[in-house]
Image 1 (cartoon, protein in one colour):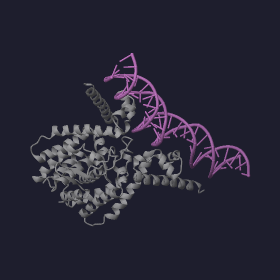
Image 2: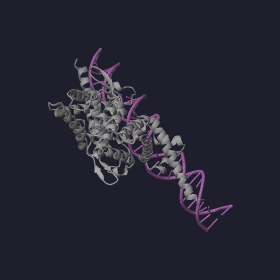
Image 3: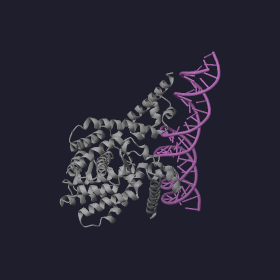
Image 4: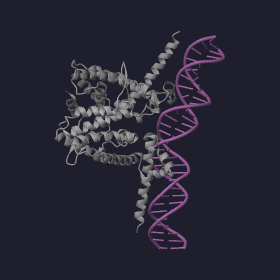
Length: 204
Length: 204
DNA sequence: CAAATATACTGAACGGTGTTTATTTTCCAA
DNA sequence: TTGGAAAATAAACACCGTTCAGTATATTTG
């Protein structure tokens, strides 16, 4: 009786088709500009069909985020090669920025866009970023332990470092960073310079 | 011939009515959930009327942002009292966080929400945040000059400090900060602790 | 194999959105 | 008082996320 199994496979295939089209379109056009109807058109099904596989747009976004976090994890795995923890922390920082540069729209829907946090008090459910954060935490903890960075508490250190990188990227993504006007001159502030300066400040 | 003047006054009054209702409703319900129709209802005019005073929702948001930045400027003016530049920088940090805590929804629409950046390449037009950023820059420049913080370039320093605070707040606003799960224990990371640790790290 | 049932899919609708247009109402000058 | 400008609006357009009644297809049962 392989029918149930085949049906399950077909169901998974359809979810793949939907999520693949969604990722492609979100990346190309931006989350807000892509409608369920657009996605349905792309995969040549009726809009209502999508609701047989995803209960709403939020649930679809959640799956897209899962995919994006897997991509980020791969990106980290490829780039975190150094043995020295401080060097590895620097690699992490550059890998994080590199991921953003290659996938700005993905970064937006992973970390900035409001959905799918609608359901209040359901922070528990948001586990997509956990493994990436764990990687950061353990690395930072090692740096704190070996006293190569000027932080004392590993939890606060990890969150602070993430917050800095995220803040920089968020400002860049909203064009607050590109140009910085002063009375006398106009300066370009780059993410790269800021990261370098931060690493200098944080290092022991 | 005071009629033209009165008309102008009436026009300004109407824009005030619209922007006041918009701010109130954005703060109460969130930008995305407030429609032009809702605002029109509130001020007891037809939706189309709003388009006689604002060309689109983006332009209205732009005015709301202007108001919000004025509030932030006041907030800074009230709280930046110390003579010592480093102390004043700390006051700035706490004032920034305090503003966010008192007006999270305003913070969102000032710094995070995607609109009104639709018009590509119009970064020139976004002047709302300039005076607040100038205040930060000059203060940080003084700190760099007097060598009380570990940054060398004032431009990079100002942007980095802002990025850190903004990153922290952005993560908090999207519930990424509240709880931080680890294999063994669950920890609360607070904005306050992170700011304190950052100031310690940055101080010379 | 045929009938009954379960599954997959869809057309059409609901109630909303931002925005535009044609029309009506209001106001002011001649 | 009346003609024309200015202000306000009702109605429509083209979308949106989502639901539901109904149809087509596949599977199971008699």
